[in-house]
View 1: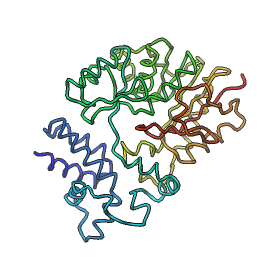
View 2: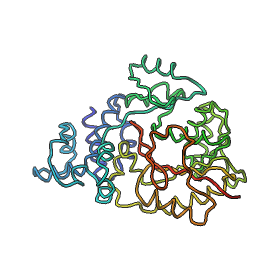
View 3: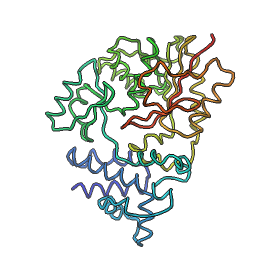
View 4: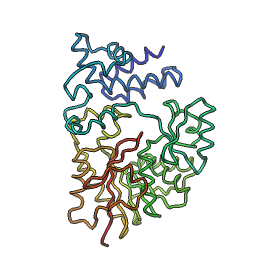
Amino acid sequence: MDSKAVAIRVITKYLKKNKMAMCLRDILPSSGLSLEERQNVADIAHNVVRWKRLYDHVLEEIGLAKSPDAYLNLVLESKQNDWATDDFEIKYSVSSYVASLFKNRLKWIKYLNEKPPTTLCINFNKSNAKEITHILEMECLPVEKSILETAIFTSSTGRYSSVVTKNFAHVQDESSQLIAYIAVSLGDNILDFCAGNGGKSLTMASITRNRKKIYAYDINLQKRLTLERRSKEYNAEISVLEKPFDKKFDLVLVDAPCTGIGAARRNPETKYVDGPGKYPDMQLKILEEAAKKVKPNGYLFYTVCTFTLEETHEVIKKFLKEKDFKISNQNNIPYTKFLNKTRSGSFIFLPKGDIFFISLLKKIKN
C-alpha cells in the first residue's frame, strides 16, 4: 500500500472518530511504509486537522462532498492563504471559543497554525551536544542549535534517530525544557508533582548532571513505572515517589493537565475546544495538594500549556485566597527575556516553542 492510500485510510478514520493521534497509532505501525513515508502521512493528517474548518468552508463553497479524497487534495494543493474569507473562525480554523481568545493575538494564532520543528533534549548524563550533532549528521538529518544548551532542532524523522533509541536524547518541546531550567535554578530538592512519563524530570536531571535531588510523582501507577524504567535507561537519578509521602521540597513543579491550546502546532485538535471544561477545578485541586509539599520560603511552580483566562489567572487568583503564598517577582530566574509578564505570572514565548503560562508562587509562612 502506498503512502497516499494510507493517508486516505487515516483521514477516513479521523472523520469517524475525531482523534487523529489515535488514528495514526492504529494505522501507521502496520502500514508497511518507511519512516519517511510514515512521517509524510502524519504531516498530511495533521494538516487536515489544522485547517479542517477552513477546508469544510472551501468544500461547501465549491460544492464538493467532504470526503477523504477531497481533504487530501486540499492538503496537497496547499493554498490556505488563497481562500479569502472575513470570518475569523474560518480563516484561522478555530472554534468560536478559541477565536475569542485570539481576537487581539493575531501573532499567536498565526504561530500556532505553523508546523513545528522536532526538538530534542540532550541527555547530558549519557551524551553531549557534539556527539549528538555528529550522529544526526551521519544519519543525514538536519541540526540546528537552540538558545537552550539542552535543545537541538531537527526534522520530523529525527524522533526515530539512534540518538533517541539509545536514550542520548528525548523528544521535548523547547518551552518545556525552559520550564526545567527555571525549576532547577530555584532549589536543590525538587518535586515534579504531575510527572507523567517524566519528560521534565529527565530534563532536570540532564541540566543538573544529577547534581540536584529530583523527585517525581504521578497519580497514575503505570506512568510512575514508566518513569522508573526511563530513569534507569537515561542514567538519571530520579526518585519516583509513592503516595502518601511526608517530604517537603524547595520547589514543587505542577505541570497541570490543561486544554493544551498552546501546543496546537503539535496537536491542532485543541484549536476546536469549546471551553476550559473540567480543567480549572482539577488544576486548583492539584495546586492545593502540591502546596502542602512546599518548604517555608520555597516555591510552588504552576505551568500549563494554554492561555485561557480560566486556566491561568483565575486559577492563581482562587488559589491565593487565604493561602500562605504570594506571586514571586521572577527576577532571579534564567531566560527572563522570553517571558511576557502578566498580573499573575508570565507566558513563555520562545522562537520555536509551545506557548506556556507559568506562575511562580513563593511560600511566605510556615
